[in-house]
Length: 180
Length: 179
Image 1 (cartoon, one colour):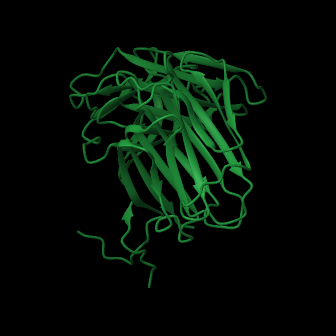
Image 2 (cartoon, rainbow over the protein chains, first blue to last red):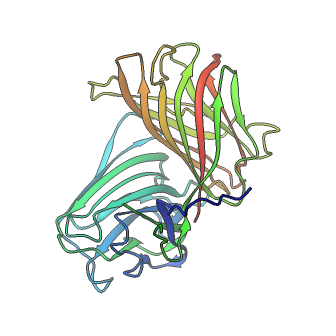
């Protein structure tokens, strides 16, 4: 029998999914990044760069993508080869640098992971936490845990994924809004 | 009247709950379908009958008729104790570890972790992160990754405590993530 009780709003909603195909970037704009949601999540899957050994960045904007912030970041990850306890670190003060040295070989594993974004549409400093897996160019399978923040106290209304050196060959990016 | 957000789809759909009792393994056919490419699985109170037996997982591409026993790249990274900064690792090409060292058979909390199963329609990756309860007073964290390097979609899972231990109990909640 169908449920006939009061309507219960979902806690998390799918806002948009974009599929890259030799795309310069994947952006989610101010129609999606709104104060309706307290937190956002992005799941990325099957992402490869066109250029080998490229770096996947997440940029944030306060003017709906006319410009993206390039200072005030404290961001970095701890990564390790799947069979090693030796940790490496990538970090940046100019962007959320999610992945460094990603392989473009489609016989290697693509980038998969989930990203939690906090305090975007607010006057609090935005922050980002992620867990990702990917193949390093000429290397092996890697897991990473990422965290970062930016000092901006202006509301963020646009986010953009792009590789530093070339286009996004393929991949799916799904944006979710979390109520609360 | 309850608030109705405009044109929103539930992002996470509850699919199934499993309460697993004493068993040599737990299989989960007929849950992973092409409707979802990504899944979130919550596992808690994972307890092996024998101490220090890792929770592990295998994929199936034939809905559980057989489970893939080779070809994985897998590694678990764990904190060696709750008050340590040192790490250890456990890897397997045959039985992907979900947490590295497993909880003790007498642990109250057991193993509690999220398992994100991403890209199940090809080159499946699994990311886990959570707590390992070594006994009644000791806990630490573990995280792991697995990839199966094939573009064949997977449609079933098998969980076990390796090697050679029954599972005493575990609870499994499966959610589909729309994309």
